[in-house]
Image (cartoon, rainbow, N blue to C red; front, side, top):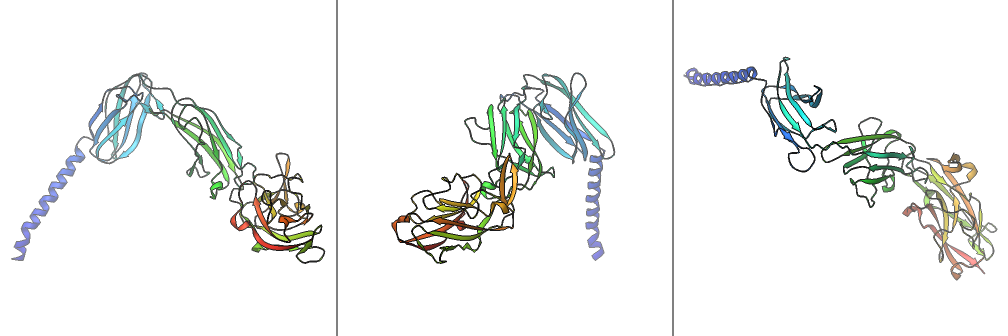
Length: 414
């Protein structure tokens, strides 16, 4: 009885299986390419919103490599799609007259939709397409320039920023980015805000610092391609490139070791300084980052009078340079009027850049900084005054841990 019970089920199963095989066989033996249409047959691709594109529809009855191209009046092929792998199914794609970033000129074209299956069988269908009033004017990026072409994004004030300029000839969407040495990784670059808005005709400029100003690490050192691409409303595309070398890139990091400053009267060794006597200090600076930090004078050991400052000594601020500073309670002027290099200049690495000698404390290095201030007037008109140190990254920032370091009361005798 059990065998008789299962026999109708088996018959039903094999019937369904046979029908599926018949269906698949019919599909495989049917036309490879069918249902091809291009509508409308006349387009005017000029971004006026009227017949700017035509829709190409087709059906594949089995997997195939598909190509769509147009033949001009000379017989030249203009490929819109070439050898694209497609599975069986229905497809639609819009065509606006642009092939490889260039608008085809006005004229009569023969469109061809062609498919080749895995057995090598090829099928195609064709028809006519008229293009008229096409916008064939490409956007141009005139005067495209990248300066400097060797870029050291480390906030030392020298070649820290890259300026990219061009003049756009017509309204277009423009993208500018770095292409990494691997040829794949891209870093977008934002346009600098100006009166001429992004995408409008006119002069455009980009100010690129590698992200260091936001505390991010820049792209790794290496040779990069700077690429700018402009695409107008109908799809005309222009591409321009230049090169950019990145080296010694990174966020600079340094501190006063252990936040420790030793103040003393050189004559007595204590922290009592009679009026007219000298207050000296000693501290250590460490570069704990991955890039060199630039500094400038006066060198460690330079003496000051309390009525002097770094400007009166002609050691003005230098954007991107690091210096040790001493400040005090009641200072009526700008912060840290007494400043020194982050070490003895003769012991730091020297580099000649743009004709100038620059001084650097290298990653992992420490440097001893000493200095002195002759007290010729009474600070804040008090007999006890707090003094403290700082590590200043000039015209960039003073990190919280490098500001107001180790304040100590100094007794002023008078």
